[in-house]
Image 1: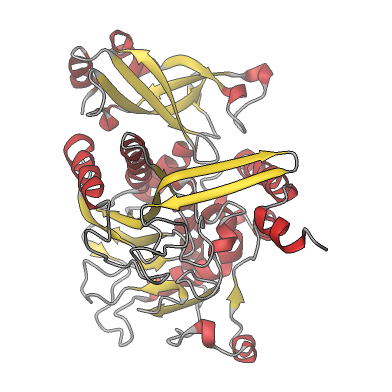
Image 2: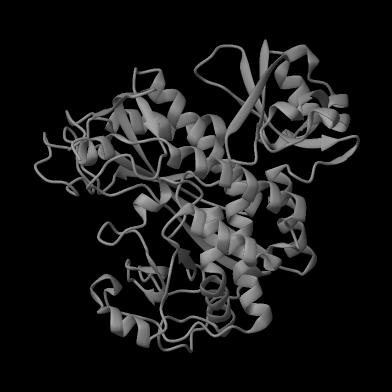
Length: 459
């Protein structure tokens, strides 16, 4: 939508939410009176942002930042009369703010366009819906309780087994109507093409939403919009939606599998009809080589929380090993085999989870793959067996690399291997991100957890 059209639309509103995303991926908003949205705001922005109060943005001595709304993201909020929203870019004194995550996505879109290329990115977004989540930590008192729609966090009823939720119908899936509402709101009011909503594998009320993707920035905006809508509509029904990677012990965690293809005009550069294995081009194989080469460092961006590494364990459809294959869900890099045509040929990268900042995750995946193309990195032969059940000595013989087992280990890898990010990520952003995440890991790991109390209280 053009700026002048947005200005006309907001005349019928009372308030507008200006939204932006911080370095860690959290959506932040400021509520402004609708009469302040003018052509000048779209041209020059609105100086309402204290960067020193946003962790990782600026110091207190250089805190004045500007929000410039993107008119293409305008939407009228359906659950609050007289409210609209705009996603914003962050500026500093007339120029783009280097640590604005959305700037990273936009820069990569521009770099690809200059090379006559475009990416098509989509993501499968998984999440849980709970009736209640209580977390309380006060000195030696610790309590954590999760109660799902199925009656308990173990998924005892009406599901009889863990990992028993896949494609469950109503009434086992008690939130079928909520998901239809989520899909309808996203389609009618935010313009997303919602394709699928279903109950996922975890018995304790895990769900998945799929929508049609697009460019890096478009899909990152869509991820933030989906999370915003899902959390809001759940809350309005007295529920809690969480995109935490692993909220439930002993059942599947939530992933954000990312599907990637790269196009030149109408040509899918990942497709080769003459390839006998998966109709995959040499370009795509080199791309996979880059993902394997940088996969351990990439982990710090695509699996960015301490909790992420509790999802990345064998046996729960979460990838652990940096291998590639077609239709093999134990591989970190999978070539979907639902169809085998030019339009659908793509690479699925399975390690990411929904705690990741999409404005950093999608560019990082593409840059890792494109570095493989540039350097012609051979990914090796595909592995078509269940890697989880492969004997350790065989994995060693094949030279199979594992993903890091902790956030700290992943950050060490990123610190040692980040030159491939530099075409788009600023040095300052990378260093700040690593510093913030190290601080986060230290803080989370310093707290005794309920399971530690259970295991070690009587030593």
